[in-house]
Image (cartoon, rainbow, N blue to C red; front, side, top):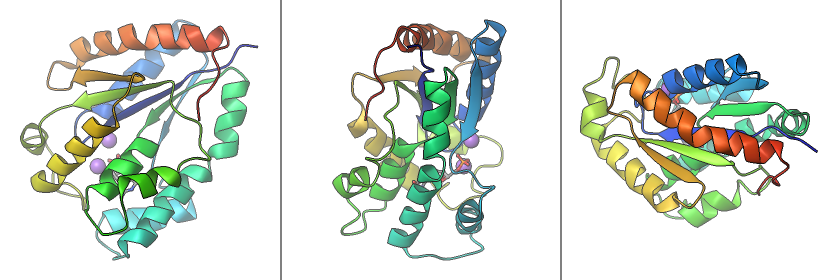
Length: 207
Ligand code: DGP
Ligand code: NA
Ligand code: NA
């Protein structure tokens, strides 16, 4: 039974993930792969609106509570995600559980450890591939629009980067996000294609 692949883009703020996700989706669709792009957090739901208020610093929420909102925002898409993957649609996600673990653990709040954060993601399918768009926080900070949202601070982004590095395993591909858009896109296509093939051939979805 053929299924879609779950491809996730992760990285610090302003690293160019959204641009690369869109280009990848366009590319896959042009080669006949049924593909959808999703973003997390999904700011359109009522939980997502609370998250948006928090990120834009219009609302102040306890760190544990806002973490639960991010988790719930992923879980509210779970059934649809599983349905689409099983129906053969490849999903390209702009952030997912790995951001959840990295950003919350980077806060260093007692109790909100990496292990605790990981435990809250177990109901969600694992990515077939995590594309880590790696770039130094100093370099992303020089990009337009930086600093508009809560987590866009160089010291914090350094901790997020370290957290992502400690989450890496054999399903991760690390790409230098400081290159040109077209160069990065070529590298992305090269790592994604075999993963889409394996999913199509029936490789089981991870947990
Ligand atoms: P954007 O990707 O630009 O829509 O920004 C979303 C922000 O939210 C970004 O700074 C990463 C952060 N984020 C994403 N998921 C989580 C999560 O589960 N927990 C926390 N604390 N932050 C998250
Ligand atoms: Na952001
Ligand atoms: Na983005």
